[in-house]
Length: 225
Image (cartoon, rainbow, N blue to C red; front, side, top):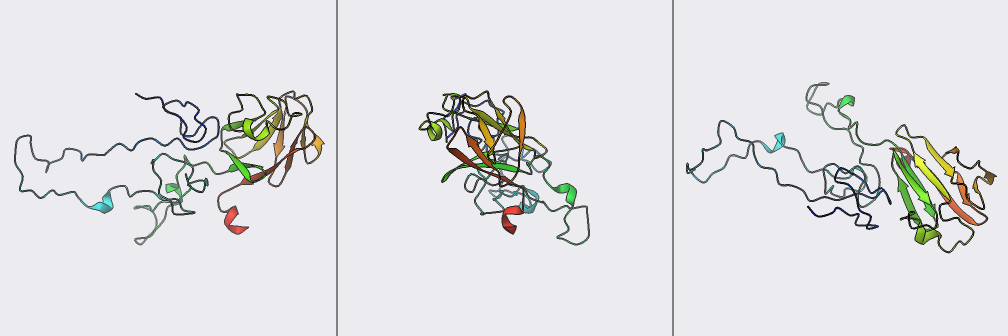
């Protein structure tokens, strides 16, 4: 089997990874064709049919997913982030048992495996996204796959300067990795090796002049802004 690599940064990924461990981008996989399961109406091997195949009720199958924000198709059913607008694919699906009427919706039918919060870090016009349970290394070392090219012109930024992360519960944080010139949140220096909370609208500064904007986005908040 060919090695799975990220189409954005080229980092090798494991078979069970959903997003790239370097740039947090989606890892698109080929869609495997689905074949109907054998049933009481499936013709036996060697038996000719009349040429008409009963494919069943299309409403019973799983319809292709689309991004609820921009409408772009979701190439892989397990994708958690839209490949076009990079926003979370949170959605509520119809329930056949809850409520009354054909369009009844059950809150319990909401996808539980879709993260509820996204941490966005802005480097001028460039943006990097951190999803729940993920981290992003900020620095000029090769290990900082997605930020090295953006920060290499800042000589006062350490090779492994700081790490930002987002917990599964939506808590965002930054940790200074014992950098030479320090890390600052809203102009206040933070302690090296300890996690410092990040909030929506915070300004993160590395050394003296590398300034990054912080956005902690939860589903639905962007539409209300």
